[in-house]
View 1 (cartoon, rainbow, N blue to C red):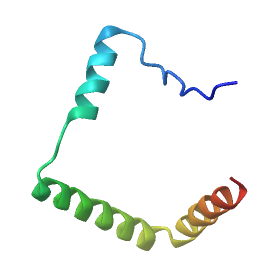
View 2: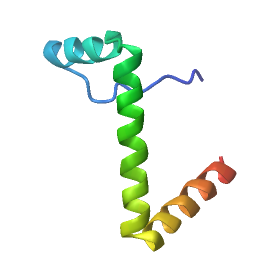
View 3: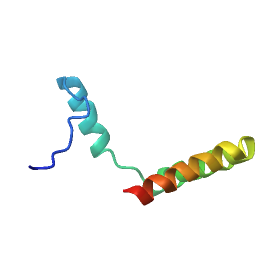
View 4: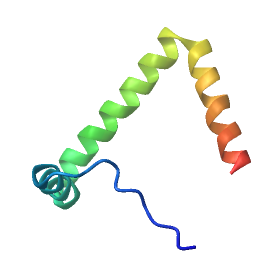
Length: 68
């Protein structure tokens, strides 16, 4: 049996074109750095607002990593 990647629901021509555009999109280093900073700020804010939820999410993530 060959492991094949699922189609991920991309069925129409427009959806395939959008997926290709997203795949081919390149960012400048400044854009990428700004995006990474936004991600860091979001994670820090989430950690401060709901520390128990963040701990629960981290434990779920680590449990999935161990089981795979």
